Length: 290
Image (cartoon, rainbow, N blue to C red; front, side, top):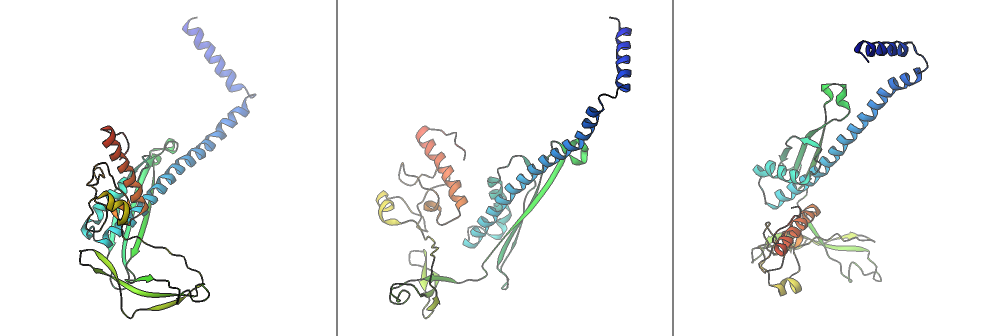
């Protein structure tokens, strides 16, 4: 078939298509589908941005809590807040779909009226998959969030002590809490310990009590003493962050046992890293994430 014949057939087919009205429903549906597909695509892009923002919020909240704890315990200084917070946030943020800007950290020290505060803010963008067809202005979608923690508003620690002669004197049922204020003091061994404040006893009426008790270090009697592992200045089991191996071969420690009372995010992180250290010790190398 010659080129002229092919061109003639195409032209005749085009004329028939222009004059045909039997397929108008398909044409109308196609035109109507364009905005529908655009809305669905925009919703998909928005959901991706919202997921990235939720991941940022979770990482930022944990970062703010860890920075607050490090500052209050003296592990870092005010000049180290920005770099330490950025390192924490980078390790905690796991959504690889977004491009993030460096976070901004503002530390405000206690001024006598308001406690110490840490405010962290951050922004990021995702590359859109559907909205970019609308033009270059829609190639990316931005998001941002903030997180704030405060501590040190009231510098008083309270220890609650129950006894059967006072607090539980009504047929073994509790009617009040007999309490005493305590404060931290440096002990003879260089470790901090709680000491009762003389004359600070007081009573709180109560008929139901839930105990939320902290933790001042691992129990020494039993496993720790029998293993003979080295302890640090705070009484925790001493182990480096590189492999979490204690001073005794084949014994590893992580989490509260090694770090002391801390946040659950630290327990999760050290548990993963310690597992890698054990795997490397047994196998010579490890493919586990660190």
